Structure formats: structure tokens, C-alpha cells
Length: 340
Image (cartoon, rainbow, N blue to C red; front, side, top):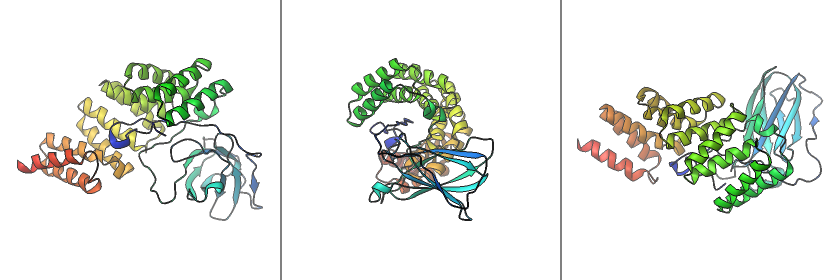
């Protein structure tokens, strides 16, 4: 999706999950089970996402596997969702095969730990063949987003907005999202996407108002909370930004983008200890796409007077991303340090 310019090119991060509904052929959600059913009283719910963060636009085979060979198979529904019922507690593998796109997507699997009396929700992102998974995108989708009963007219406007965004028609897309929200004011996905688009357009006050509405509807929703934190970082309200990002991290503690923006907010409130920890987490979790964290670490160490650590961080960045958009900045900082 065009809006995933997010941390994208490492300028800023829009946590944007756009769910697109599609027209499917006949049957969805049929489940076939092996004779050795695992049996239990838990359910697994999930969603299958395309590499751009939107749900699959065709039925996709989803298989539940365990070490002893028990398994169940289902197919995704209209919005990419799937569900397995009567599952025993334990460790499982969810395997996803996009049957109609074998020439495009790899067979993908995710581990899931099933616990009784706790929500068991998983999102699985397809990977294009021959391409590394894009660690720049975090695709956490809240259950509240999936469970809303959205009127068809609002859904139509949302889908129209998604297509317009893909075509680079941001103002038309924003208008379509606004119409969707006018029809259904609690439309969480539309509010999140509208806030993200307004952020991308630099309309920070409007983005702030929109994302605050989204977080009131679902305080546990990762995407609106992170987007809200990003807006507040851009507005230099660092303490409020840190509070919002902490709420996002509570929902998704392994999201590298959230750790990166937590670091920026921590730097804003002059908490260098936390900033250092968050920058290391962002890079450790996100890898090369989050190499920009190494530049911030270099700046932090240089300000501290720790020249060797600063040099090491900048050299590490240049090893990971020698032709990146921040390479010249890193080279200049490194030259300045080595000249001292």
C-alpha cells in the first residue's frame, strides 16, 4: 500500500493496517479434521494478510498442525479471517498456503501457543517468493477492528479510499474515509487509516483528533495508539507520545517501530537510558530495515562523550545500509568523530 511509507525509508512510521473486503467464490470457513482431532475447549482466531498489510483477496488454505500429526484445515472468509474450534491447550503451527497464487507466495507458517480461557488470536503475513519479509511493517490487527459490524455503505467508502490511496490520490482517499466515518462514526479501521493519511499529509492537528477518537473506541488497539504516539512525537509533545507508545507496546511488545518511536520520545524527555534501551530493541527486533536506530545511538553516545561506542554504532550502520538514505549523514558524523 502506498501509505506504508511508515518508517518506510526511515523518515517516519505510519502503523497502517487497511483491511479490504473482496468478492469470494462460493464456500468459506469449511473445516475438515483428521480422525485424530486434538479436542479441547479453546478457539484460535486469526487473519491472513498480504505483504502490504491488507487481508488476502481470495480463499486461502489454513492448516493447524501439531507434532503428533493431529491437524485441522479451513479456508479464510471474506475478510481474511479464519477460526479453529475445540482446540486443546498446547503448541501449534499455523500453516498458510495461498493456493491460487503458488507462483507468487511462499507457504508461510507461524507458531502459536494456545491457552485455555485466554484470547488466542494470530495474524499471518504472506511472503512473496524471492523476497525477504518486510520488517518495516507491523501488521497487528486488533480484535475490535475485526469484530465491528460495519454498514455496507461505510465499507464501500472504505474500500474506495483504499483503492484511491493505492493510486496516489491522497486527498480523494481522505474524503472517502471521512464519508465512511460519517456513515459509521465508530469505524475503527477508517479512523486509523484517516489518521495515518492525515499524518502523512502533515495535517497533524486533524490526525491527532482522529486518532484520539480511535483510541477511545478501543484503548487496546495497537495501530491507532502507535500512530497517535507518532503524531505526538511530530508535534514535540514527547511525554504524551511516550504514554501512547507505551500503551501500544503493551499490546505488541515485539514491534520494532514502536520501540524506535519510544526511543525518539524518550530522547525528547531527556531520558537517555530508556532511549538507548529502546534503540537497541528496535534494531534487534527489526534488523537492517531499522538500522537508522544505530545512527541515533551514535548521536546519543557522541553527546555522552563515549566516542568509541559512537564510532562503533555508525560503522555498524554503514555495514548494514551502505547505500541507504542516511549513509551520507553517518559518514559525516563518523568523519567528525574520527577527526577529534
